[in-house]
Image (cartoon, rainbow, N blue to C red):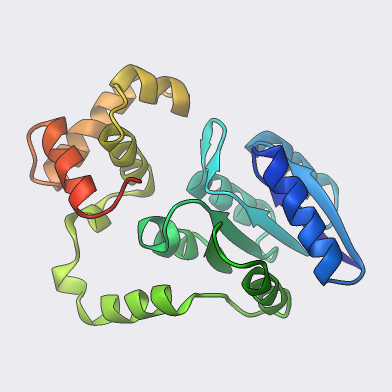
Amino acid sequence: MIRILIADDHAILRRGLREILAREMQNVVCGEAEDAQELMREIESRPWDLVILDVTMPGRSGVDVLKDLKRTRPRLPVLVLSMHPEDQYGKRMLKAGAAGYMNKETAPEELIRAIRKVLAGGRYVSPGLAEKLALDLHEESGRPLHESLSDREFEVLRMIASGKTVGQIAEELHLSATTVSTYRARILEKMHATTSAELMHYALRNRLVD
């Protein structure tokens, strides 16, 4: 019996994944979690063979959720399935402990191949992301400015670039406005920028926002 926990805040997507897994794999039992709290309760109370995790969870960064999950269950493989392109979050999630990263537009057949590879103890990286990771090894000195940001700073940058105010970001991330303003100041310094408008232009130019 293979136990797979699907962590995503969209009920339709969870149902769709369950149907794909039931159709394509034998002896699969699926569980669901709609937010980070439910996810952590599930992995602490039951044995799972794999977690399929969305990057954008209500109230928590997917990177933070992944780090918490790996601290609690270091050996539990996690396959990240996200609406965000690989070049936005792929490398960060792999560094945080994910066994693979896929875009939600990936064909079901490729998803099943990735799941089987991860369950077998391997790691799934698409050809495009693999090429980017290989190039990064040779271009470390010429890294884009946003790659110097911490995971939280990168998340705040994307939210600023999406046009959200400090207050909106604070509410969504459950942080104080002062803390968000501190993150913004650090981002501006690391990105050699002086205004949020400059951050927005940079993010759009580098495809960091949809």
